Length: 318
Length: 318
Image (tube, rainbow over all chains, first blue to last red; front, side):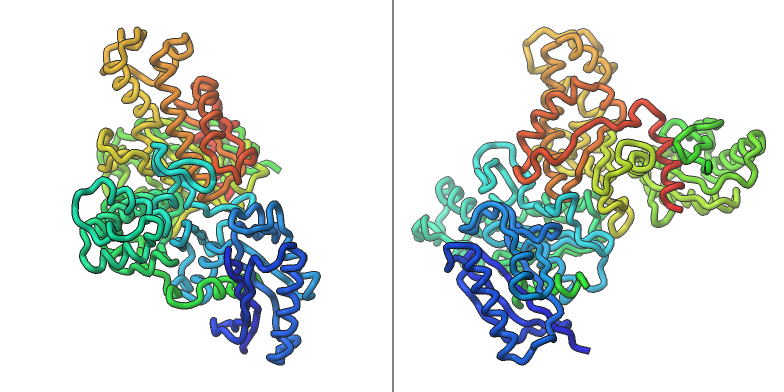
């Protein structure tokens, strides 16, 4: 029997909402600009009214079981969004309880990377896996861990922040968190641009990247250049892959997952990233784990991972 | 009501066995040299006969519920000891099934660091904690993780090997695992000696350590020197604490534990280690976790952690 939930994917720019069924089919939905309202209360009201309208116009009254939300710095335990640096509203935002009050449906919330992991478990390539990791390579680097068939929340709901593992002890790269050398300052859409800018400056080799204004250089430019055989761009991917490989090999020593899934914008680089990554991962992995850990792209990589993850949270939590 | 199990702590040198009750009281027991037998079968027979005798002479017939074992490279899922570098028998050793057959009691087995974590949960300072880590600082560095009230085994039973997280990308320190730069090559009784030897060579400062034959220098010598204010020895502890602090801060980003317990020989250094460690840990910890994670010594540090851990496994697994 088909079951239905509402998925909400809150991003720094857009908030996307849609009805999703238990097979991962996305039905009607809508978007609002995350920052269209000055007050958080107004944002909740805007979303709430939109949901009421969505349900009504699709004749889904009484059919939606639950609302699942993926949000930056979302805390599953509290249902709050806590100190999200990319949102205009500061402090602790009781998203779940406020929307619940407005709509009268149960609301569960977690952070976007955890939602991606639950999406992989419910709708993606991890259906049969008890222990796996999903790494989202976007503006930053997010991660969600399943251990023993459960999402790993930790004592405070904030487990799975491997983007903030410190991987370099020099003070070259400052992170949004205020510290230096976090993994995401190297391995993310923004990190790879920093690596490229460093290499452009220091490396005498010719490169198409040198013709791009440094303010405008994007991870996609680096990908395109690498795809065309640009030596510096390929070096940038090689460096990035090596750093990610060590970080993943280190993660394996903690949770020993059966698989690691990569998703997010930078993961769309495909073989350009995966080929060197696989070689380095195998090289750096402790022998005990060799041949046991699948390193692959998310099977939802070309789908709406955010929405599916949010919906999966609602289904997973029944 | 008092309940009884038998704990077995298999070390590279000695195998220790004793009857333990559910309050952590250790009763009669015995030791055998782990390497006294050429064949693994003979070792099992020796232990088996010893257990039969132990039970008989204490009139515990029918009272022992289970046997718990902590072993190097012990795998809880299989009950095997798998490729333990410090044991003379190579390959896969089906310890649990062989002892079960010999004795007729159920045998559960895990690695020594996992046993230490279970010991902390059942008998120690983690009784009320769902999410915590135990780090054993001995010849190597072992770790056992509890998440959501369960020991973290991973898909293959080998989770919790943070001693083999790669913390340095230079090739200065080769690890017993064959790779370079593992945490335990810096943070362990052997790692700290290596750091001291490097410093002695490079640092012109006077140090009592310079009067000790480099082949004989031990972590206890470094501790004693640091305790007496020796500048180089204090630097060695400072470096070691800094490396451990970053590794622990990184671990927190994965599992978000409520507490981290240190135990093992090097942990007996007390304040000499803990004072700089606390400062660095606070410095390197992601803000999100600050003030939430207790860093402390195991409450079993002056007890027989190995035996208690093994016994705790038997109780925990009922």
